[in-house]
Each structure stands twice: as C-alpha cells, then as structure tokens.
Length: 447
Image (cartoon, rainbow, N blue to C red; front, side, top):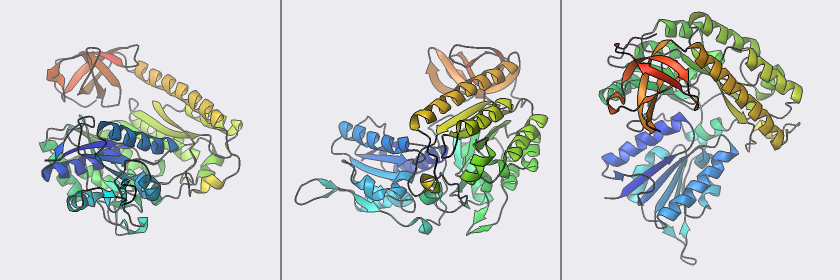
C-alpha cells in the first residue's frame, strides 16, 4: 500500500482541491500520511500569484527529496499550468500536471507510477501532462474535509476579468461553475461529516453561475439555497469583488440565520488612476458605497480588504491616496501584497517601475495600518457576546476560534470545545492580538 503526502501552496481554492484529490487517493487504497512520514509519493499543489510562491514550490521539492530521495514528486496547480517546462527541470520532480490534467492525476499515476530514467545519465526525467488553458473547460467539484474546523467549498473556477497584473486566467481558464444542485449535495455531505462552518470559495466567487460560457444562475440564488441546508450552522463568503456585491446579497446576509457578518472585498488600490491601469471593474466610489451599505445594516460586520502596493506608475502621491482612502474607511483588516512582476501580463510592460525596496516600505505602512484597524475593530466589541467556533489547535495552553464576525478568540484549552459553537463574552485583547473571552452557558444564537 503506497503512502502519499500532500502539500498545498496558495489559496483556499487550492486547499479544497488538494483535499478532494487526497480523498480520491484514499478511496483507491493509498495511505495518506504527513509530509515528513517518508511517503512514496509527494503531491505539491502550487500557486503562482507572486514570485515568492514559485520559490516556495522549489523549496518544498528540495525538502521532499531530503525526506525520501527515491520519492515520486508530482507538481500540479497554477504554477504547473504556467511553467510546466521550467518545473520539469527542477531536480527531483517526476511529473507535472496542468489545469486540465490535475484531476486525472490518480489515473495517470496508477498507469505509470515508475519514474522515467535518462538511459545515459541515469537521472530522472520529468513527464509533463499538459494542455492549453483554452482546453480546460470542465468543472471539477471540490471541498476540503478533516484538514481544518471549517470546510472550504469550491463553487466556481476560472476568471474572465482581464486585470493587468494577474496570471489567474492563464492558469485556471475561463469562469465556470458547478450547479446549485451539486453544491447543495456537497453541503449536505459536509454537514453529515460533522462540519459546522462552510467557506464558499472560487477564483471569482461572485461570478458564480456560468456554465458552457453562458450565465445560468446567480450567486444570490445559490446563497439563498445554501441558507436552507439543514444542520449547517455557518456560511462564510471567502472573497467577493465589489462590483458583484449587490444590495440584494448584503441585505440577505443581514437577514440570514447562517451567513455570517463578514465580507472580504478586494480593493487593490485606492487610487482612481491605478485602478484604471489595473483594469479593475469598479471605481473608488463604488467600493466606499459597498462598505457604507454593509456598515449601515450590520455595524458589527467585519470587512477585510486586499490591496497591492508598488504597481507600475504608483507614485508616492498615488500611494498616499490609497493609504488615506483605507484609513478613512470603517474596515477591519488588510491583506497587503507588494506588486510582483508576472510574465505575460500587461503590467510587466508598463512604465514607472517602483523599486522593490519602496514596495516593501509601502507594504509595511499598510500592514501597520491593518493592525490599527484590527485593534479598533476588536476594541469596539469588548464586553459584547458572540459565538465562537473553536478549533483543534493549542497555543500556550489556549485554544483559538473565530466569532461569526471574524474576531480571533483565545480561551483556556478544553477538548470538549473543539468544533463546537459556544457563546462567549469578549474581555480584552491579549499580547498576541487575540481576544480573551469568558464562555457563557448559553445556546447558540446568531448576533
């Protein structure tokens, strides 16, 4: 019985796909083990949003070869689709699987598990299973399970947006989705496994509903259907573009018993000029309007923001437009990314390159702002009661969990609390930036 280990780089979508592929392996008789448990097969699911993700892939391959020099190493994911030939030259790699081929990985390995050897050098030769991204038309259902307290449920793949800095359309293809019926089936399977929270994920989650190039459903209709799933306690939307975050969706979240008051809304830049260069599909006014709408209905709602600094043409003045715009918005935290040149994107050819050191300085400024915003948001909730879903992790004798509005809570470890929703009273912010709390003897109720 062969042992197989998995390593995932990148987003929640990658985690959902890795988990599904791992379950397929187990169903076929393989034993899933930890990465360091001397597996026969290493499967690395890659990201390629930044240059750093590419470097991480190479490092993980090196570590795999230290653990088992004879191990079979297979690479899949976005980096594999974008750079298959380059990956094939990494020492230790046996096979590379593109976007269309990654869900055939198990069948291909069953047919051809033995590494290909160069007859002259006796070194391994990587086999590449790859198709043009235009041929990646199928939609593959996926969700994570048993890896975390929450489950990441894939509802959509690919993207039709032509953002000038992004490689995702080249790595994952056109926007396409599952059916509402299939997603509800998956949600019921997840509930049956004892999961209490589902996080909806995709490349462009709010663009859900496209099949065979035509829009057949709306995201809000899926949201309404999921709200009826029996036994499911919480549903969280991982990320949604501001132009797809409709009044109807915000208002439904306010009324819902399952959808939590937490939105993650990519901004990328607070400068109108930079947004135009990025080819984003909204303007600053729309973004601030969405935040205002959410806060008017749900003052306690958490709002996270993605932002890129150091994009070509971003002067100090334009960066400060972003900084001041974010500083004035009632948001809760930021995910900050220094701009990273990606091959074959429009932005690579744009003038006005910002030095890497300057990108880092601007990113640091925004990360400090993020801590300030998070602290302000947490302070507003001291003394309030919220429900927390506790996780199976112990840190210095404490266990952690998230409130419905995404406040990280720490309480004294109690194994009975794992994967349980408990009402707590928030007390104070500790030195680690987590909220300390007192558990209350109250049944679960959404706030």
